[in-house]
Length: 113
Length: 114
Image 1 (tube, each protein chain N blue to C red):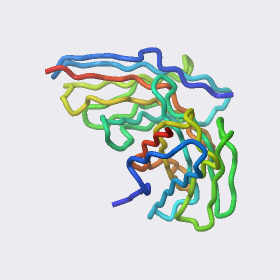
Image 2 (cartoon, helix red, strand yellow):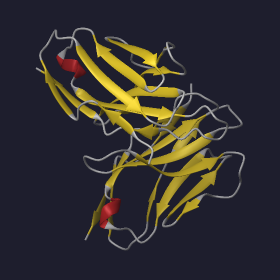
Image 3 (cartoon, each protein chain N blue to C red):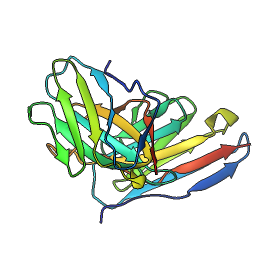
Image 4 (cartoon, each protein chain N blue to C red):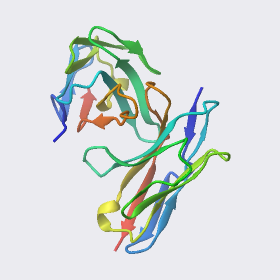
C-alpha cells in the first residue's frame, strides 16, 4: 500500500523568511501525481501545487516551489518570503490514475510576525 | 467559480441518532469522496464514488454508509451515531479526465456526538 509521511508535525517561521516542509512517500508505481494542499484555520482546503512524476522539472507557483527527488521518493515544499496568511496545516498527498488521494498526517505551520 | 458545498458547518447530535451529511458539487465531476479529519491522524478516507449509484469502501467505512443517487450529490450516513464519530468531515470531488485529478474540497462539517 502506498504511504505518505510528513515527519514534521509542527513548524514555525519568521515572516519574510523561507521554510521547507518535508514529505516522503512509498510506492511501486512509475506514474503518479504529488500534491501539496493548504488548510488555513477554519477555512477550506485548497491546492497549493502539484507535480507529475514523469516531469523532471520542479513545479513552481509564485512563492511556492517543490524539490521533487523521484529516486529518493521525496517531495518537499519550499515557501519563500513567508507571509502571515501562510499559517495553515499543510498536507502532502499522492495518487496514481483514478485512485483516491493518499494523505500524509500534515504539518502545522505558524508564521510569526 | 468551482464549488463543493456541504449542508452544515457545525452539527450536534445525540448518541444513537441517524445523521445525514450532504455534499453537492457543481463541476460535473465523476468522482466524489468523504474523509474524516482528526488531529494527529490527518485525513482518512471513509467512502468514495466513481459514478452515480456506485460506491467503494475507503480505509475506515465501519459505522458509515453513503448514497449517490445523482451525479452532483454524495451523502454520508451515520446509521447510529456514536461519540467516537465526533470529528471534522470533509467532502471532495474530482474529474476522471486524464491529468485533471485535482480534488476540490468542501468547507467541512464539524460533527459533535453527545
